[in-house]
Length: 219
Length: 360
Figure 1 (tube, rainbow over the protein chains, first blue to last red):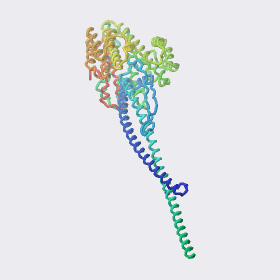
Figure 2 (figure 1 turned 120 degrees about the vertical axis):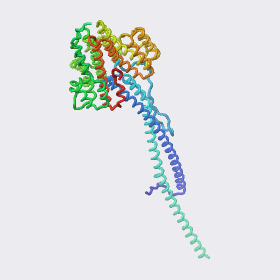
Figure 3 (figure 1 turned 180 degrees about the horizontal axis):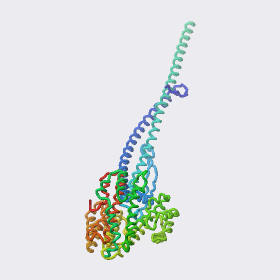
Figure 4 (figure 1 turned 45 degrees about the vertical axis):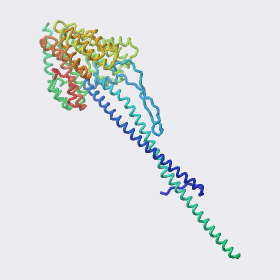
């Protein structure tokens, strides 16, 4: 695929400017490549963190669900459902902000807003609910923070992926569009300049020959 | 002792007692699929109630409902054949289900469940029959409507007084606690009205049940770091362990010292069975709360079996209470097995959750 060349005046000055632009483009592509590598490293790190957190979360949720099933076995599924539906929900707010991350990219940050601790009171009727149900609820409450952290990591990973794809597009544009375009233009300008040089050389030689012939005639 | 008043009820209890599922048969049901469990139950006392459950889709909820209906029906049957103070006591015990229905209605209204869905949570019994519950649920938009609809019954009056005292109506726990307190108060008063050996046995068995509930509440609240003031609100009417001892236990810094306080009372009162239970909890005070609660849950069953062994099997209320306890734990165990089977829970875990008599 031949690259389209730029519309430029085929002058030596333009050639110099084009060569400078090509060097600059290659420099930018190198920097972008390094950024891309940094982003890939950050992506791997965040992915590993998310994986560890997810495993931890699954373990906690597994324990919570086991306890929940035990509670169902002890007092019946209907009673558990009835109690669960009528219990006051756990209310919590999530503060969303941004923090400067890798390469200064703003990464989303989610924080569970700590509510003022009210006097501790049982959420369910103590007489009817087995401890397993209370424990399941506590375990689920414990998972709230990891869930929010996992959401944050997922958002960061998405941000990094978007940045990687952006950087890739930029590198590709420079490597496969701008640089070939500059190369083609440089080659064109060089060709034109060479042609001009050749024409000048012929013209000089013709002039020299004519001058020589004129000198021979006058002699 | 008036043997005549047992003439009709004792044969009935003896027959029902024979219909209880053998422990080995019960254990053999663990891990079987729901169809197999249903077939096994069709061969037992639950036959009629299991038949009323839909057969197109066998699920744990339908089977659970059948088991509970059977228990209520058995209690009602015993009430029919009983008389005098025993009848009053059995009616008081059956009020547990009435209270459970009231709570179910409160919860359903709070959760804004539709009426048909809410009715699945109700086992019609006593004054709260199917039509009445349906009418209350259909006409109630909020908790206060439920309370007002029940004003003709004692439950409405109890709940109204609780509602009048507080400003926030969202939390159902105070209402439920008030209902439970009234229910246990009723049982205790009915036990107090009995005479002679019946009174001793009923107070022993039912007293232990109430005390076990109180101990459970204290243990749970201690574990959840509930303030001492709040713990007092959740306690049921005191039975054999008095209020002072419970208060001391509440003030105790941990489970071990709380149990030591209660044990002191049991030792002073020379109640050997209480001592055993409390000693067992004291010995295992480091165990998970679920283990301690299992000990307390089993206490009343053990006590009724102990009373049955200690006194003559017939012509006292001990056999009736022991049977009711055995039947209730059978229902609970079957429910546990059914849910375990539906959820494919490992056999050992299901076995661990069963409450079996004689420490099997």
